[in-house]
Length: 285
Image: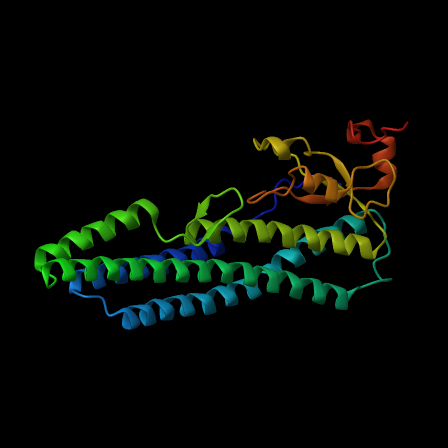
């Protein structure tokens, strides 16, 4: 079937979510700086205000996830139905409504949990930062007997420099990279949107007995991903002669921020048309 290019992301909705994260992050860092400038930090009060900011963000993010992720899943399912209809498949035989509801719920729950992990990570970073700043203040009080205007400015400048240099990391990945709250959320939303769209397409295909998909080809510069562009994969691994979706993923396809779409492919067309041939297919012919 036609290659529709990369998965289409609703950019406006993504930007709206990222702005929420940026606003919350700015409010938290401003709260820490303000507290360091005002005198000895009132730890409990500062942390309550930070916690409130993050809780409000969590409510907004959860709402976003439960509205948007099902839309991407249904995008993929609808593309599958359109292509299957063009292939002459009788679509009245199976609906799979219950299975689709379960799949959407699993995706939204998993995505919401991943976002929550990032929020919890920032909360932990903020607590450590407040505690470190309080220790600096207490050390100054012990050394000088009180916090003078000059020492407050010294500590506040140090706080600002540290925030600018290191920020408040949300998470550290396996490679040791630190993710800020907005970068993590932007990566996550794009990754999960693509995952939801492709899973919606694959699930709908499988309900009608179709197993093969073709990966979109749009000239990616991602080395591990590029080798899979235009390739035909078996979703379940049950169609002989084709690499599996799991093999492709293990080799780098659908990495974070990947935009590749899966498309329905007709088995007879794949076998007969050289345009769909590739080094992975027909390796035994």
